[in-house]
Amino acid sequence: MLFKRPTSPRYVPFACAAAFLLAACGGDDLTRDPAQPISAKVQVVGHRGASALRPEHTLASYRKAIEDGADVIEPDLVSTRDGVLVARHENEISGTTNVSALPQFASRKATKTIDGAQLTGWFTEDFTLAELKTLRARERIPQVRPANTAYNDQFEIPTFDEIVALAKQMSAQTGRTIHLYPETKHPTYFQSINLPLEDRLVDALLKDTYTSRTATVYIQSFEVANLKTIRNRIKSTQPNWKLVQLMDEAGQRPYDFVKANDKRTYGDLSTRDGMREIATYANGVGPYKTSIIAVAADGTLQQPTPYVRDAHEAGLVVHPYTFRPENNFLPVSLKDGGTPATRNTAGSVREIQAYLRAGIDGFFTDDPAVGRTAVDTFKR
Image (cartoon, rainbow, N blue to C red; front, top):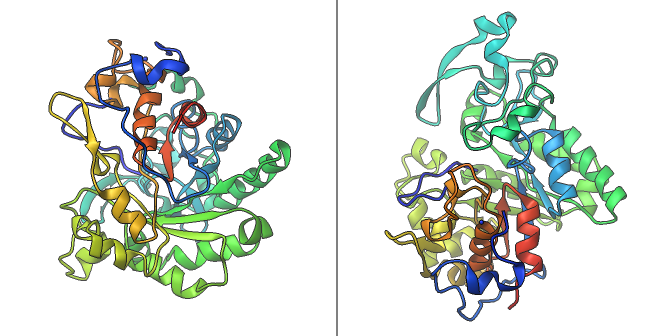
């Protein structure tokens, strides 16, 4: 998922006891009658693992997410030069690894156009898996998560197979099935350089009975064509696999639409007709959270939009992104007066519970322990 920069700032340690979070922390009207999710259980998704507490997309981050109560872990997937799927939020890796400090890879620095944007750095498709395994992960946003820098240069970049193995192992240890939520990153770009992601992902999932039969696997993308490609391949043979259409800002277009000169936007896909079209190839939608509850100019959460209702009427589950526990990411009305980097557990719980009340079926969070608290203390 993306780090959004909404118009109002959204960057409360428990300031209020869970029993009276709804009554005591802020002025928003968050006591409306709840809408009902269509899922039997609200899913807490560990966004890039427990990325508020460990460097993102590392086995340590995924393990922490599971230990802290995540139902699902989310690896973003890109390809190596030799066609192995690894977990990075984007294929340019200078912001999340130590690659720029390694002289043996200085010559790999390049400038490329990815999804229409020119980027300079180091790219996974220019490294073999063996070479990537010599790199170490670093914290993406040290100014907000300085404690995570203590883990810099400790952890490898994991393969998707290693993440599946961890989920399987932790499921056996905890006695609960840990589900997976892989995202195909830059699928049109990887197709253009003959490293398509779709078949590699499907093949990886099919080769282990844990992912082919036991766990629920949500496959997500901001593009459309690759989800349809996966749907056409699996048809109805994998009932435990669910496809999810991710949604960016209303005025933006999926990059495969841009390449195909399709003028439709995410806003068009978010209409009732758009939702019905999505339901022909996907099982859910993953919108940015303000599509469901907007934030007013004064920093208060507004009444829910019809988004969840329209998606549910189309038969789609709704999994918004992303809930983060630091003041920096919270609406003004839920901040606790600390610094932007202050962990504000109570404010984050209160924010999540507003969305639970709006009827969401699951949500992405950088801190699954906070998400677990929000779900477990929520009263309908």
